[in-house]
Image (cartoon, rainbow, N blue to C red; front, side):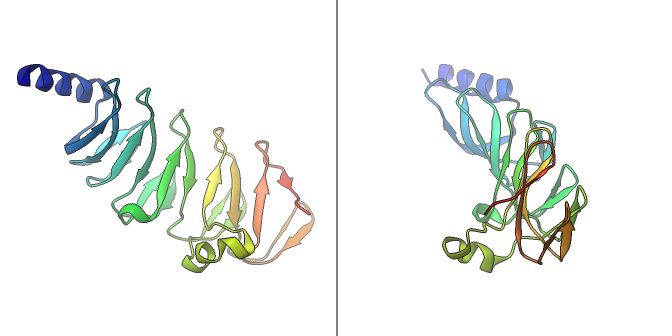
Length: 173
């Protein structure tokens, strides 16, 4: 039985092609649910540092992680630091949610890096501090790092802005 378990373990890790440490959580179907990368590895085309904690859907699709350190993903420097910031991905591997480690201009929009106070008071002002994207790579949400006129409307630093998947501003009343 022990040999069978080892063979199943080896086939699952090989099938999902993940360099997991020895502490791995599995779904009932044998696919990896959650593990920590034992070394730098590439998942869904994204190079991730060793120590990153990675999660998969039951079908074996990589969908989010806790980066061990600040890491550049699809040209964006995403915050790391263990369980503090969940970086999420669309099924295609495109970045879905990031916590920027530095202010950055994305598609002409000055997006703010994550600020602790923003997340702390999310219930009061509704701003999460995250930056999010549609599966086509289009910016979906961010908080501004500076004043900006967008589609003729002035916005202040730290205002939250939302866009549709075509890049058009969504104005909320």
